[in-house]
Length: 442
Image 1 (tube, one colour):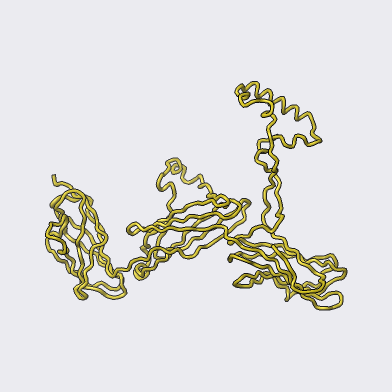
Image 2 (cartoon, one colour):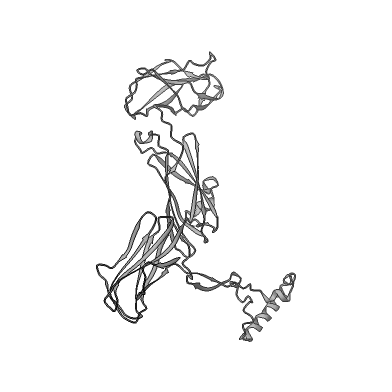
């Protein structure tokens, strides 16, 4: 953090700025040793009796003898000594790193270092970025009446950091000195806001299901304890996060009924990563126009975390884009087929014909296409070969049934069924094709 003044000449006042943040753990750097390791080899502890006697003798000797010279300060006297934590907390010694999504909190003191009192002090504190200037404090409506010699006026400002790059904390004071002269004192404190983490995404589409993988990488110097990583889908999508227990369910955890909470997700400092996987399917609650408008926006992430001593942070990503959704005028699909289908026995299948445009289409003629070779199709229409359907309103749909028959055993496909728009002379095919299993009649 750097500071500088913009006016010349001596001033009675001066700003002092200290960042308010959580303290850190005080770690003792010296390497501590166990005196037992100096007197016995590695195989000495194989005999439990002799090992316990020697340890008891060393502990009793340390208890009798007082260590005024601190010659035992490098010895391990407690089981927690090897960790290096002394039990003390260390206040911030420097301004430190400031990351996007954190709350910048600063303690500002206006000191009167002159030999005379100043009066009518108007104080302002602002955050200036490349895009905007944000007012944090303004006492122009109620100026400080006076600041005596060696006195000070203290205040605290807070700002949610939402921009990357260079920031400037501008502190200014307008006051009357001992001679009644009106003076203006500005001081600038500069700092840089860095990105605490990065989010890399991959999108995979399997039939009508979209899978979104997010890799979050920690760029800070401390571990991040993730409070939540929520994906907020666009209104045409429904999202479900896939956990490990979805693939490998644990009977022990299910028996406890959720009494044991999930362990926190910790992303290690200096490049640690964690992956999240989400399953996205088209939402059934949205209107047809929204569902089929072809938007490629999937949604955005809301990420909150805490550092080692609980300082919060929050980020929101930009909209995640996927592959553009293809827009079809008419969509015909299989809705339901019987669970058991026998060879050469008619069965009824349910279909759905949906209009995905903003205009009326139809009427339609449903039949089995004759474009392929004369080879017999494994699944054909039984009985009446053509079915007439009425017009479909904009974004409307119609359910209908066809009487089918299978002529081959094993896994077969219901394919080749088309819908002809008799008015516009356009043909639409069944998508996707459905596989069925045909059993023997015996």
